[in-house]
Image 1 (cartoon, one colour):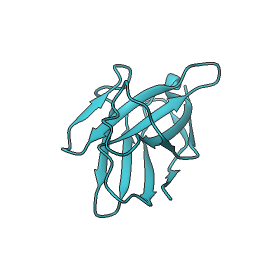
Image 2 (image 1 turned 90 degrees about the vertical axis):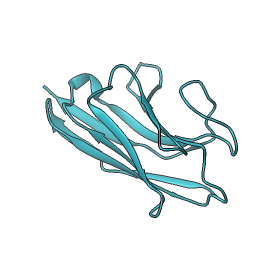
Image 3 (image 1 turned 60 degrees about the vertical axis):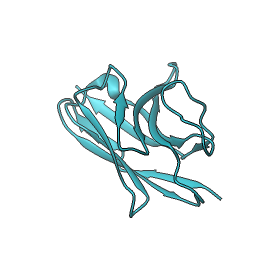
Image 4 (image 1 turned 135 degrees about the vertical axis):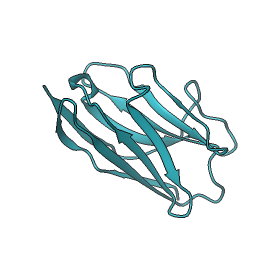
Length: 123
C-alpha cells in the first residue's frame, strides 16, 4: 500500500525559506515522476515542481528560480526547498505520484497523494 507523508510546513516571513519533506513507502517499482502540488483557499490546485526518474526537473513559472525539488532514492524521500518565499506561496502543499508506468508531469493524472502540509508566509 503506497503511502506519502509530508512534513516541514509551517510559518515563514516573506523572503525566508522552508524545506518540505515527503516520505514515500509501499512502491513495488519507483514511480516515473514525483511531484509537489499546492492549493490555496478558493484557488485551483497547482503543480509546483516535478522530478522524473532520470533526475530531470520542471517547475511552475510562479516558483522557478526560487524552489528546488529533489529526491533521495536511498531514503525514498522527496524534498522541496523553498527560498525567497512570498505571501502568495501560502497554501497547503501535497506530494503526489502518478499511477504505475505513467509519465506524470504537469498534465498527467496522479493517483497517490499525501495528507498535505500547510505553508503560511507573512509579509
